Image 1: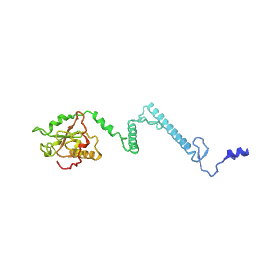
Image 2: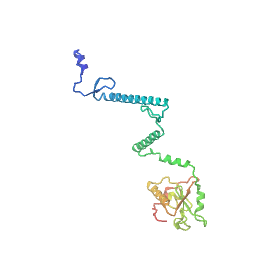
Image 3: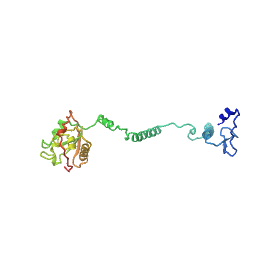
Image 4: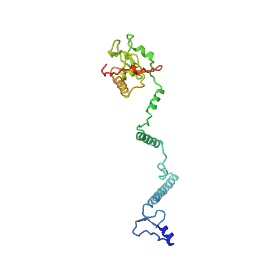
Length: 259
């Protein structure tokens, strides 16, 4: 604390001198000057060395350019013009794509770490965007879907579950009088979760428990992966379905069996 000693005694503090044993290196900016090789000097020394290397490379390039111009003046054949090695490279399309790729990966990992989702919990909004994408599929209204309930001989039998329409004509249980005929010609997604086949023949899934929603998802996968039941079109729901009184729902379990 030299300043404290000066303020108390009035004497000048002793000047610190690096010992001769301290490692020293050549100062790249001043010839014949040695500087201490300590951590504080390393960034300066490294930058000076880099500048000297760049300057040397540039001068060598200028010399090659001079020789090339002389050959051209004499009419001699020369190769393609060499680019200045010290000139900064421009970021091309590949560089931009690489940059955006890193940004997307970083954003996804940050979302997983901070929000628990790679898409920052935007799955629902992304799913809603699909409804604006044009499709070549013919949409079924509820009244149109009802015409495919098996009551007309020779006409296919369709059912819908959560908006997806399937052709179940080959299933005997869906024929008139069959045990699952009540699913024909209607989107009864709610009934697949609750097991209330008479009162919950509606597509409205509001108010279902997680277990009931898992039941609906199970049956969606059942029809999607079935070898004989093929997906037909999307079911366009016309009008708003009314939610049945919960008191009408009975506790029941839907047996998963091959239909």
